[in-house]
Image (cartoon, rainbow, N blue to C red; front, side, top):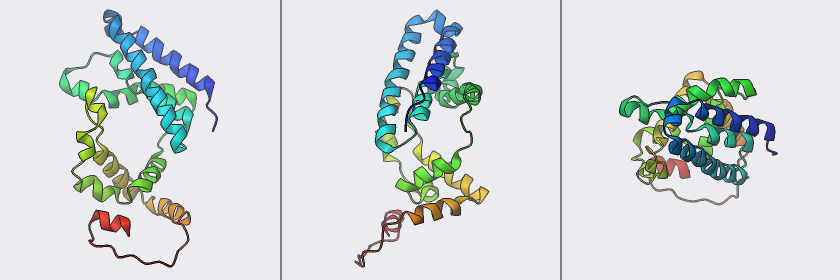
Length: 195
């Protein structure tokens, strides 16, 4: 899938203009330069991941460019700082509407999650989330709350009654039966996933 350069250029312009109009970043120009360079580093990593995983590169690059746009504001206490990702989404939303990008893509997110975690509602509740203990994002602020994300996706899809559509789509991709049998010991999440 080709990358939409016009969208990327508009996003870069929006990010730079937001940072330039920030009274906080104008008082701390070294922070503005750091945030901009950090956004580009994250974007390069995101682009590589998108290419390897078959994700939409344009959307990944836009998301990575805007992921920390809330640093253009002054955070009120620790909660403001901890919730900067949510605030970035709020700030970016009108711009994303201008670009005409689709919103409310929970079905896409749920499908991507199911490909690696067929029990997101269960795992999102019982996993000890060792990945969060090693999450590199913690060097910047806090680890990604993967369990909360998986739980939210599953609960929302179940409430909407749309999970069966996604299950059927994934079942159609199932590889043909080999005729071989295996034994699975245990009926916990790992055993059920393997089954």
